Length: 477
Ligand SMILES: *[C@@H]1O[C@H](CO)[C@@H](O)[C@H](O)[C@H]1NC(C)=O
Ligand SMILES: *[C@@H]1O[C@H](CO)[C@@H](O)[C@H](O)[C@H]1NC(C)=O
Ligand SMILES: *[C@@H]1O[C@H](CO)[C@@H](O)[C@H](O)[C@H]1NC(C)=O
Ligand SMILES: *[C@@H]1O[C@H](CO)[C@@H](O)[C@H](O)[C@H]1NC(C)=O
Ligand SMILES: *[C@@H]1O[C@H](CO)[C@@H](O)[C@H](O)[C@H]1NC(C)=O
Ligand SMILES: *[C@@H]1O[C@H](CO)[C@@H](O)[C@H](O)[C@H]1NC(C)=O
Ligand SMILES: *[C@@H]1O[C@H](CO)[C@@H](O)[C@H](O)[C@H]1NC(C)=O
Ligand SMILES: *[C@@H]1O[C@H](CO)[C@@H](O)[C@H](O)[C@H]1NC(C)=O
Ligand SMILES: *[C@@H]1O[C@H](CO)[C@@H](O)[C@H](O)[C@H]1NC(C)=O
Ligand SMILES: *[C@@H]1O[C@H](CO)[C@@H](O)[C@H](O)[C@H]1NC(C)=O
Image 1 (cartoon, protein in one colour):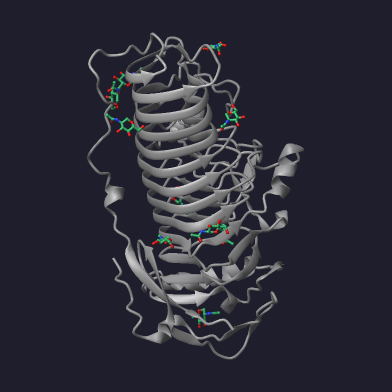
Image 2 (image 1 turned 90 degrees about the vertical axis):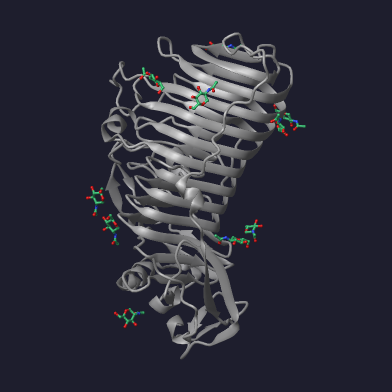
């Protein structure tokens, strides 16, 4: 592990003198860099970096019009040489930095200053394409392949994307329009995708208008995500917030998400492709999430879950005007399991279904999916829920000959409006305690009051302590 540089040597911070003309968007580079001792910023990170550079060192122009794809590539290639020498931090200064897809490197921090905005290019030639993900077998929008993500990393270790509330704007409307007109031959890009990697931190940023999913860690482990403010129009297609996919040891805390699809969706591959790949999502903790998503879930488990989903601990959630809370989506053909799920503490305001499980979720990569690949849904615990202005308390549809089992629901108060059949249950089994309104007969109330379990041990990812890192910014005048 690297220790934090103490900033005793100002040379560490590179040598360029930036003059930003206030009130104009132009950035002019003059002969040297001025640093002011009191412009030292503190930020928490899994690792601090010894080397620092500014995006403008590599010819970038922050006018919102000039493409900086080459500048990002040049910068990150240059800084990758420090991977084994204390790592490097790339500062994205205030300005509007238009770019296509670019790749990250290991032992690297991308740092967006306040008022720094990375803009996703709407020129498709700036987006390379990849084959479909191995655990999906097909693209999600189009069967062929997929566009690379705006910020992409594969086979990396120790990567941080953070800042003082800078913004990454995917400018998704271009992609949403093409998707609606069915004009795309490849699956739309995601905003940030990290694949086959470990030790990842994504924090303190505003992410807006992704072309599709926002944050997609896949086949990765040891991931810390916090302080993200994610915003897309509530009618934008597939703008899921954070989708851990075949990932182990994930912590998601203090995020606010408004979107057109699930605020968080835990996944692990699709039908036979996911079963064969066999990589679960597991040991995941989610806390203090705030969600607005009128047509989707606050947290979905699935529908792609064919590598399995287990040991997920979810606490302190708030949803406003959201379709459902922590929803399970699966289908015949998916195989694998969703088990050992714990949810405690939800405050829900205006919702269609508080509890929703679906065993007949459509969308298959191949029409001839294996009818014998039945998912095993078991050990799903919910406690401490208050909900207002709810249409239906529960819609719990298991699979015939493959019921969802060991469902536990305790200490729940739901204020409903109107509908008669509050609990609609088929092919499920479980128990309830202290739940209003009265649950269905398949979820009998136990005589003695009890609380559904929630683990009191800590996951390894919860014990990771962030270091306090510093960097000194150049003065702008
Ligand atoms: C995020 O920002 C908050 C408030 O500015 C700060 O307290 C926190 O340390 C920051 N965390 C990270 C990981 O940058
Ligand atoms: C990139 O790396 C080289 C060292 O290999 C260094 O001399 C150079 O100044 C760096 N920065 C730029 C902008 O090229
Ligand atoms: C980015 O990474 C992908 C996957 O490794 C690779 O195919 C692509 O060439 C890389 N792009 C650049 C510009 O290095
Ligand atoms: C990345 O890691 C995966 C899994 O270990 C491996 O199959 C793949 O070949 C690696 N890709 C690169 C570009 O190293
Ligand atoms: C971050 O920026 C967003 C959008 O610009 C703003 O809504 C939010 O309040 C900011 N958060 C902080 C902590 O400054
Ligand atoms: C709650 O979750 C645990 C762990 O998966 C499981 O064993 C149990 O059956 C679930 N339901 C009840 C009623 O405890
Ligand atoms: C489903 O999981 C439970 C608990 O792990 C196990 O007892 C049961 O055998 C599994 N059922 C199937 C059909 O795999
Ligand atoms: C029941 O849930 C409410 C929040 O919804 C919480 O304040 C209360 O402490 C819970 N009661 C028990 C016995 O856990
Ligand atoms: C209650 O929910 C309905 C939709 O079912 C919504 O139109 C209405 O605004 C909500 N009322 C309040 C007070 O939030
Ligand atoms: C109850 O659920 C079943 C499917 O399991 C569905 O066919 C039926 O329409 C639902 N009833 C209501 C009133 O929503």
